[in-house]
Length: 219
Image 1 (cartoon, one colour):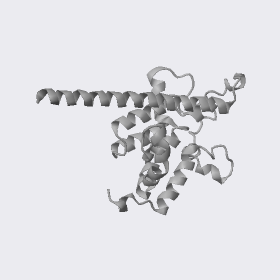
Image 2 (cartoon, rainbow, N blue to C red; image 1 turned 90 degrees about the horizontal axis):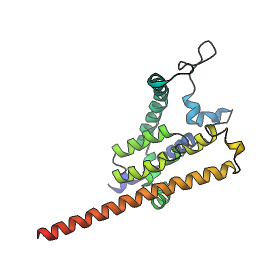
Image 3 (cartoon, one colour; image 1 turned 60 degrees about the vertical axis):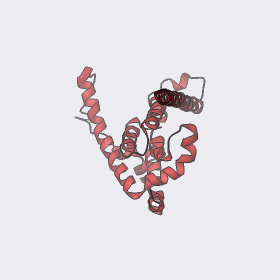
Image 4 (cartoon, rainbow, N blue to C red; image 1 turned 180 degrees about the vertical axis):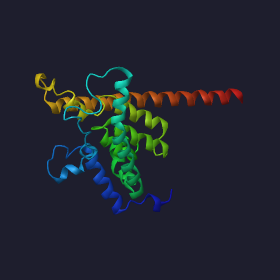
């Protein structure tokens, strides 16, 4: 790749900054115009039928309930893909690679181009999955890097959002503060990803050694 292709423009940096803010959830609870800079607020909510419930209804079970839940994910995934295409066109991925490589390479062994997915993984597992798929299809991360990154995402998925919302009933009875709980989860996520990273490295090294011995034996 030429230096010209690697060059990050001001437009790329601005796009990256806006996307980080949108995916980070910083303005999720704002009531003013700044709430429009949050992904969840932009996705909005379905209206209520007769002022009581949305189209999923109540007490659904089985595959039918799962199907309706999957339908609720389509708007956010489509919107995320649109943002990704805009980000790619404006050079946000190039900016992310420069900004996040010094952080992500040491702690996870993945390139900085995964920076946007890394940020979004704390608040939305769906958006992060779409971003990771795009990175893999564009050959911005290798198969091994994708495996490591997915192992980071899967443990305590959408850690900030799910801990605060889904874990809300348990937080008041916990002896630890919410900050300590989040810190433990993030540390464990990184630790687990590095276990996978080590296994992949050891397996690749072992396979290379076996291949070299096979060549020597053949000679």
